[in-house]
Image (cartoon, rainbow, N blue to C red; front, side):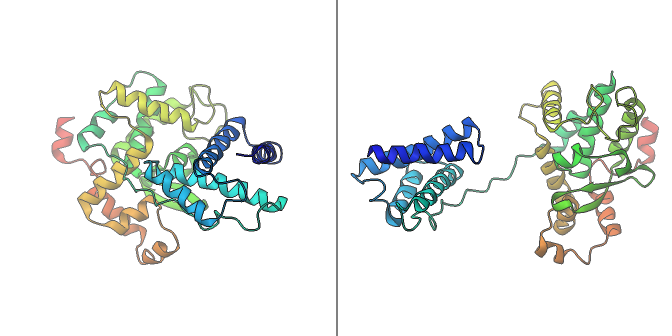
Amino acid sequence: MSQGALQDIDAYLQVLSVERRLSQHTIKAYRRDLNKLILFCDGRGLLLWQGLNNHVARLFSASLNAHGMHAKSIQRILSACRGMSAYLIQKGELSTNPFDDVRAPKAEKRLPKTLSVDQITSLVEISLDDPLSYRDKAILELFYSSGLRLSELCSLDLNDLNLPQKMLRVTGKGDRMRDLPIGRQADQAIRNWLLQRNSLALKDYQALFVSKHGNRISVRNIQARVKHWAAKQGIEVSVSPHMLRHSFATHLLESSGELRSVQELLGHANISTTQIYTHLDFQHLAQVYDDAHPRAKKKSKTDGEKQ
């Protein structure tokens, strides 16, 4: 490894630090990734940058894969090498980017784990002894009732609720809005929370869910509260908001078999899937939800007698 190549790497990282204002943590990660390329080339007696070409770049990617490195890690390393090579082209030390068409193997897609209906029931049946517990129950019920993304739930305002109609307006990815039904259990939990909310919320504050300080609850806070209650309720897996969303989709799909309706409720539609769903109206979606969701079904006479 020549001293000049090391100086080039230092200069490139300095550009990232100053011009792109990347954190020192990120800069260190870039250096570690580029060091892997250095070790690979040194082990084969290749001079950087003269010996670096597309064939070498492909061998480097293959070697990372052969050593069992995760696909996402390989993607990150190749990205660092691609950026470094682009910098060298600007300096005139490379004529083409050897990493331009080199891609990591596709990452294996793993479906998030789900909770069983019994686990969900245990999770949401928390003890209600202060305003925060009422808030948290409403959050847990709403995640599972309506399949919200974490960011969607966090950004809800009071005027997004239509409790008389048991409806919720959500702004999802790409600022796409969708109307979702709210299950009976979630509806009651939200109503109970609203009776407690004024004891915490700042005056005229519009966020539906607020922290103990009265402002909008943060994403991290929600994640922490979900984990807190899962542990307290004796659920022996790490529970996240996304797991609740995936459980919602899985349980509803198992009950209804309505794949397109479930995807519509989740807001998963891209351009092509939106075209598939154009004939579905909300009345149909609401009917699927009411008929299939475990915590959406209306009270029976037996339920009323028990209460």
